[in-house]
Image (cartoon, rainbow, N blue to C red):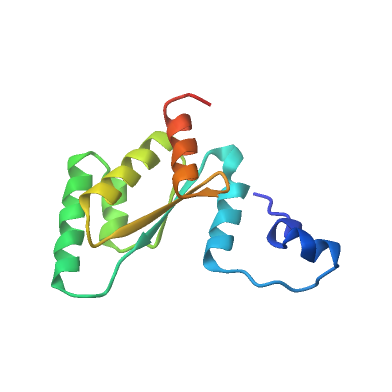
Length: 133
């Protein structure tokens, strides 16, 4: 995995020979997914709110659904409240993303793929999962 330091600086910062920049969480995950793009690795960022017992019921229900769809490794990691899930298989990543997004109101998920985030990442992952790219 190679991440160029230049990819972390804005273009105008590079032109001005800036020696420091600020990054946020999304910058880091986007850079990671871009670095892993040739390997077709998807990153799911899981969001587990710490609110009340409904969250735990929703988490347990989601884990059961994931097991029911044969996503046992994903279910185990979600039950442990893993914050980042990395997938080497676009088909399983897309399936897990849809299950998590659609089957839990309390648990959130963001998709990062090939240096993209959100809808663009989902379209690219869908294309790779269905052999269209």
